[in-house]
Amino acid sequence: SRAAFRRRGFRVVDLVARRAGLRVRPLLRIARATVDQRGLAREARRRNVAGSLRARDAAGLRVLVIDDVVTTGATLAEAARALRAAGAEVVGAAAVAATPSWSDRRVTSHTG
Image 1 (cartoon, one colour):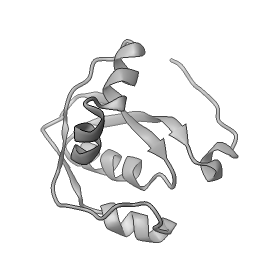
Image 2 (cartoon, rainbow, N blue to C red):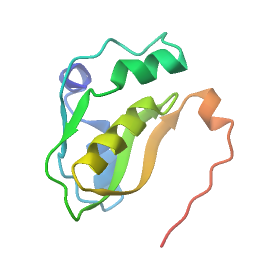
Image 3 (cartoon, rainbow, N blue to C red):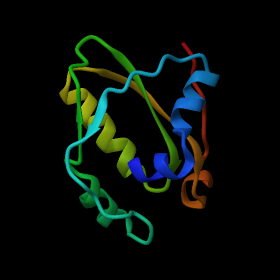
């Protein structure tokens, strides 16, 4: 978020992507404001972010969506929706950290 960027002075996602050797392209923009997700239940988070993101023209691009923290996946899902609507092929999603409800799940990696 803009607030997190102002607070930290950098975007965690940019650092992670660059460290992984991926090129960062700022395709997403905020289409409408949302409330802070902390304390919201799964469905409330989904409703909160629904329609909140728009993507620049991404026709023909293969995109990996990266977020700093995953709690319910609502933000990642909204980002993927916006990117697909703009013509991107979303090939996967990644996060720097996950809350216990996500980290309890078995995680597998796939390269190829």
